[in-house]
Image 1 (cartoon, one colour):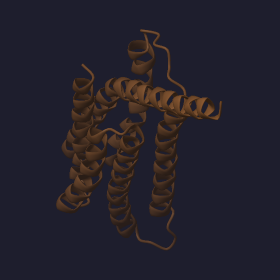
Image 2: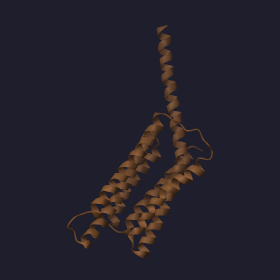
Image 3: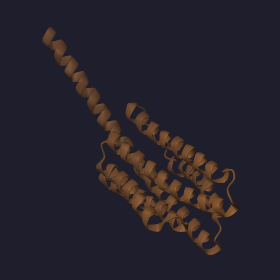
Image 4: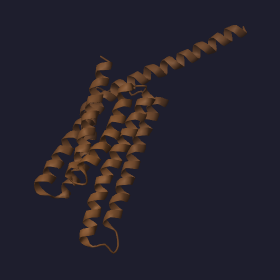
Length: 211
């Protein structure tokens, strides 16, 4: 009887492990289309804003970034979710969702504090304030792309997917390299272009893995 109970416990543990592995694979498979979607939007928006900023010499074009999440969530809701696929909900999905939620919170917090500091500094000349604002925005770009790469690598660890792990490192470290090469000007947006292309490539690789 004791041996039978032990075997039952082992079989239960094996079943739980298999179920988690299957759900992890399903979550990874479905994430491919969202990687491609957000990577495409990030690439397009960064290039459009980059060329508009360069042609007009106006940083105000960065306000277009606020349209990207609206379009992205709308496309995801209307297009990618039309199949009415049953969502996988377990510890793995909650962990990956928590990772991206945490990234969003940290990215917004960093953006708010950085911009607030650069534009609300007391006793600064207008020229000095403008230069400091440009440098702060540029460093903000590097900080966000570093957080983005960290979040993607963490998801790769949670989902046990090598493509996501590598892509996260490439995005974060590669983005920092581009930042130090381009400097504090409109070329900083090429960091997001780079991150978007890496995200699209990751989605295509993951999609190919589950053909």
